[in-house]
Length: 355
Image (spheres, rainbow, N blue to C red):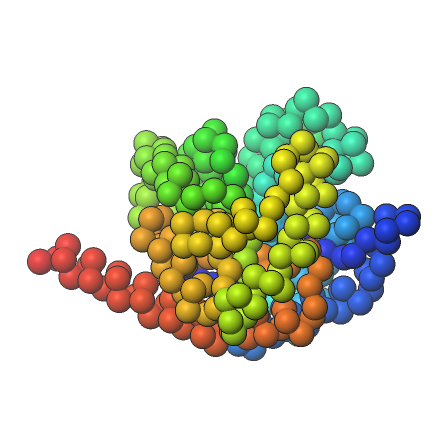
């Protein structure tokens, strides 16, 4: 199993004007985090796209390109690219360039976006929310398939036999589809034969199992072998040497961010009791000591059989040294143990199937 991290590159907000207090230093810290993730043997680092004052990640490919120059093997992906409000030609060019800079380590994770600020910013109508994503995803796949592209247009102007450059090292450039709990989004990813990243940020993991089953069934109906299509589980969490230390460290920032966003969306306030419930084995947060995190990742693997797990360590601003320690524990303790156990499970399954 691949183990990695994703981040929205959050910043603290000025309580008076609401603007970012530390955009420059946060960029420096995220590059340190990606470099350390590479050094301790993690497989993937993702940067999400947001256009809000509390994040400094409106251009994930730029941050990832800077990280590519400081890393050697870790894969670098968006998490996600809000394809609905962007131009697929530019997205492809950005990540093809990242692929060249990194020597073939770039990926695109395309999604519809959990926030909507980018739609009016780039002149898109929210009433076209799903149609925009569907059309632009098809164009993105056409761009990675063909150097010379013709496109009939729609929400984007037509393209008449134009070359799109540069071409990436990887052929094809990996494209994942990110989904929340929306079944049509799951079916779309499966029908296109694309790997799927499922976000689980609340509730019991078991309740998401039908979505993975739907994905594999839809892939088979579309003519794809479900065994060849990869899935990822993406969750909030944190790691410290002691489980209670991890919870106490992360709770204030999680509460501030989730309750602030909750006020925008009409969610009820999150309590410490609910937070502590979510850190239990059958809760959504992957949070605790290395041993607790190992147990939880493997518990979820027994449900989903996924090939990748990404953790968002910084839901809100966190002390940099704590984050670096969490990355170190994830890479040196958690990831090797998880990989070893998953490999043993797969070997046992293969043996039983062949006998």
